[in-house]
Length: 141
Image 1 (cartoon, rainbow, N blue to C red):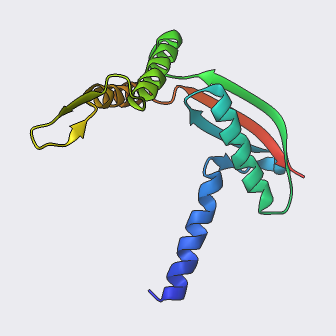
Image 2: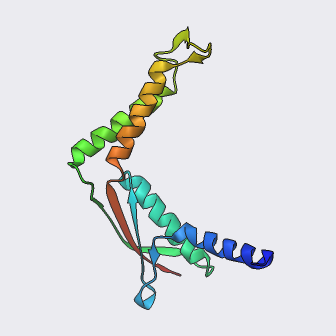
């Protein structure tokens, strides 16, 4: 493949990534549906994608309707508790709490408690996944 064609193809594919969840609709009414960890970040992502989609035609996104729904695999309160625990664990893993000032057998200093907390937080976060589906209908004006 010639370099210019390769670069054009790469640019074209990456340009669509900013509104990957937008579905153009009849009569200019478009829909974007995203999965998110919470309603706020889902609404933000959906609006960003709608704006990017409309920017391509030098227009602005006008939101007609938006909704969010918990669609996770577990009970919603359990999901929220796991997400909170994950955030706490990530915060603790980034602090000096639990620092082990001893050295490992090879002589490097380690934060054993923080590392375990960080890994546990990632596991909780992965288990919980993205529990909300946010859907937005919009048009470009």
